[in-house]
Length: 190
Image 1 (cartoon, rainbow, N blue to C red):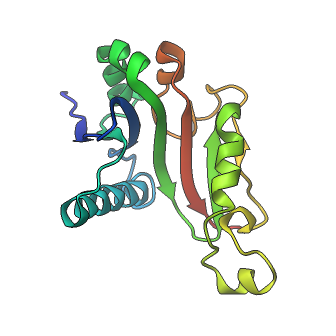
Image 2 (image 1 turned 120 degrees about the vertical axis):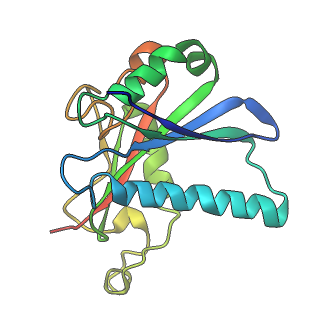
Image 3 (image 1 turned 90 degrees about the horizontal axis):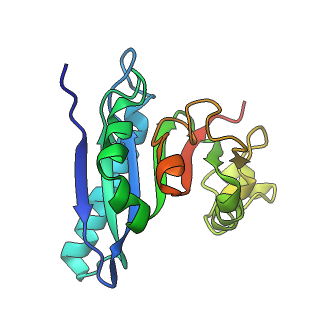
């Protein structure tokens, strides 16, 4: 069977040779409403909002952004692995990070899965984003960092735990290219 990755590119205006890679897989074991399509919807909306902002304001990101949708992830991370193997030199010299957006299956707790070097950055950014749950704000949990109590921002000691480097995504990227990986999602706190 042929596989097809989908790749979108937004050129940067100052650091165009530098790439922020973001993505998700689009194949699913069953119906895919949560894994992966909840993440695909978020990724598509981020891309749409960026393009709309570029059209209406002339803004462009400093770094180039590559947005990807991987095929054949459920069958062995094939789409992303093939992509990394094909572009290993470019990714190794140009990619600054890979942001994975796989499952958004709740709305009460921020779920971040990352390597140790990005954990503090994730915590600090979560402290800047207002909490959207009114009951949580009333008891003093004003940011996403305070959202929910069951899950926290986790760091992977070994990127091969679970589904590689934070959920589904570029399993081979940190090994072949030394590119840090971070995965975002939202889960129910219960």
